[in-house]
Image (tube, rainbow, N blue to C red):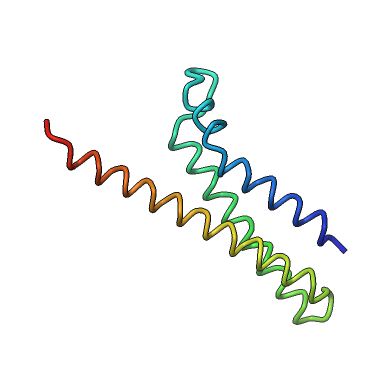
Length: 104
């Protein structure tokens, strides 16, 4: 059963996404760090991977090869990742709108 390990992995991934200090350090690294687009691309990849894992677990449950707890954990991880991504998107849009309201 992978519930504890899966939950720990999901929380670690979310902590990396939610830590503004680490993200700012990556953006300020210059040539050695990632740019903002790469960070967003990595986050989208993680969300997609989580959704695929949830789908795989659901299909395995339908065939009788998976535990209900594993399926619920995978779906919850995927839902949390999507909610985090939506929150980041909302903040980016709000920041863009604020910049657009600035006088030149």
